[in-house]
Image (cartoon, rainbow, N blue to C red; front, top):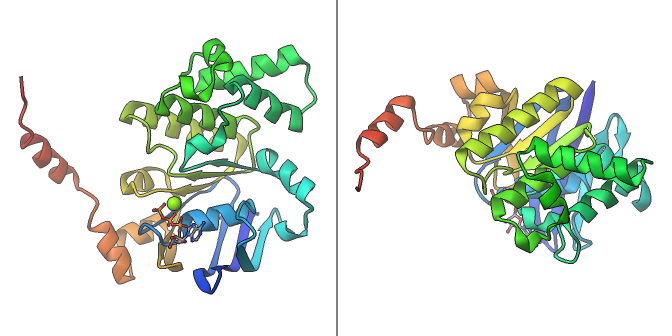
Length: 268
Ligand SMILES: Nc1ncnc2c1ncn2[C@@H]1O[C@H](COP(=O)(O)OP(=O)(O)OP(=O)(O)O)[C@@H](O)[C@H]1O
Ligand SMILES: [Mg+2]
């Protein structure tokens, strides 16, 4: 069954059409990659799903979650859906936390909105989610965002997004701020959650090596339009649109990487 169904979505801002007639579908447990040039409308599409775009934007088309149109819900219902059914790991992870509350308070408010648990249980749940992303739970719980590094904050944002095991996880460049070891750990966590809970993943990235490793299905965007959609195998082995061909030719092969390493000068 499809978890997310987007049909003919167009997004306009003033007289400009920024996203045009985008359609795709994500099945339960599927890892769906949305790739393409910077400014092609990937994040706007992701924001539109959770209806996170301001009033300056207008839409046409439809977005359904588990066969229910998201446009039919009230503002209050939509807030409930975000977190419980759809959760985000944003490209700009700093927007997940205000500097006025501790990280723990953010987790606590999030849990309180969706579950009725006692305070000690909420704290234990938050700390264990933080530890799953290799953060020092007790310390981070009491910290403010400005007391943490960018990578730590991103991990906290990821823990928050995965906390309630959503049906759809939207990850927009989730590992940009992370070193390669932490990044691998986070991706493995998303992979594990997908296997355990069958959640659907919408993954937006410029890192085509990650797409090659994790994605089941790929859509390629250019200038607000999806130019090609297919299984990973079809796109990787036999891309049809010239832009996809151009994009894929930029992925370094193993021999290119070995060559690059050979050419690295080691300074002692
Ligand atoms: N708040 C906004 N107001 C006006 N235009 C916007 C706004 N946000 C994005 N845009 C425009 O919409 C287009 C698509 O932006 P979007 O952020 O979706 O790109 P993207 O594909 O996510 O790019 P990137 O890979 O760089 O993150 C761009 O031309 C951008 O300038
Ligand atoms: Mg973006």
